[in-house]
Image 1 (cartoon, rainbow, N blue to C red):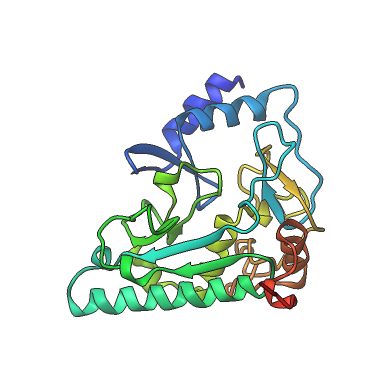
Image 2: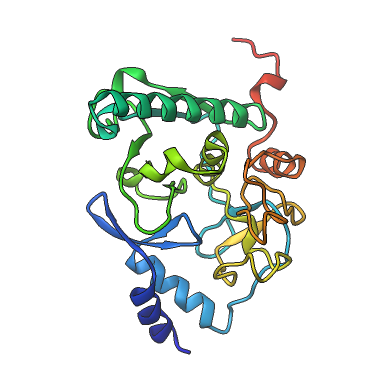
Length: 265
């Protein structure tokens, strides 16, 4: 199959989402690519240089040449807002907003305890219907997503105007741990890819596992926060807990948590 044939096939088959004035294709369950990135992905998969990296664990997004890890610059404080109007103005909407805001804050605090990242909620921006990019690097908002998608995040190298965590209404009835879903999505926001694309993952768990734009940083971890539950939850974990291997990989990319240091001015 040629790149053009694979591209045409995926254009027909992949779910689509219009957001931020652009059309996105949804890959790997809750990852998104635009039209040009999808074609580049197809070229890499079918081209002579397309290789699947060793089946190793916590995995990071890489640049197109695979030489550089995609991550936030050192010292960046990841400011965020939770856009209250997108959840609805009735009592139920206000309750949904509060749940998402609090669940995200809890998950962000956990990641801060794992590695050297900082999140800061900007509550004064929560009342806006759109993300105020002058105050927040990204927003958390409710938006209808296609199919069975619960949430959809972004990577650090996505265009700034599309850096939003999208929460579908199905999030509020999921059997997964709702804070765990946030832990998983924050993993993407930090640049981490799905664990189940590893070559060592069972075939029943893998999706488009030949995706070339990733690099393993720890041995394969079947219970990683970034692993989808599959095969009757034998692999993955519906709680999406952060494992010891996840911690090791995150520290390798972002360093030790700031709480590990005695900071002085």
